[in-house]
Length: 303
Image (tube, rainbow, N blue to C red):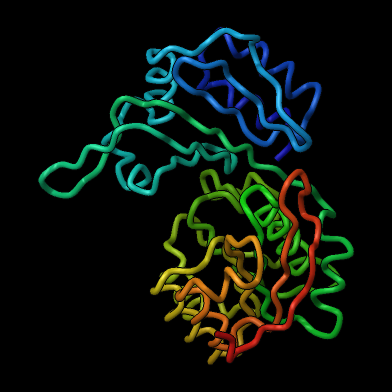
């Protein structure tokens, strides 16, 4: 997904007065635009790989501006996006994702929606072919094995996973690779076609919950490798147990600023103790992106 295409996708959902400035921003910074942040009563801000900038000077967004953006993002049908809203985000075409802040409203059936939108965070999907160069060799120096990629938000976990998937499913490795793309960020499928680059030997389960998708892949696609993002739920741990018993490699990511944090999170700790992952690749935070802090052997007895 190149920056021009991302730009044209994102500006569809913005107030008209911001569209020209955002187009200029992408023209200047390209794939180094990470986020567009919109907040009621404050100026729109672009978060860049090495800093930030105001998009339209000191002009502040109104509640009507954000409500209009929100309705456009929901295709004017908030009800049809209730499941996504319950997770706090909506995925746009191309794998771009909008985090939503506001006042939660829960009906008698337990369905949750959002009123009084206070801020929107449009996270820009990025492809950086070759971003795993060097890291890839360190992770798979002897054999293709299970890897958990950890790092703080915006450290490049998803971007790195995309490039690893591309490498593994292409020459010279030709591993039968399945992407379990629950949030439509990895392959960004549209009508059966990936908007992001995937390899020749890659299959995509788009929109499947990770646990269900992992099991489906095992049953129907005979993969060598299964790749997913942001793993850590109970159902996912059970599914991973099925995978390792079938001799399939799992590569996944998890949020953490250091290795100690991973072992403190019970679901992730259980995944590490399962033996599914042989190594942890920890990424740096801050302005770094896809930069390796270190590679650590998994301690299956870790406490």
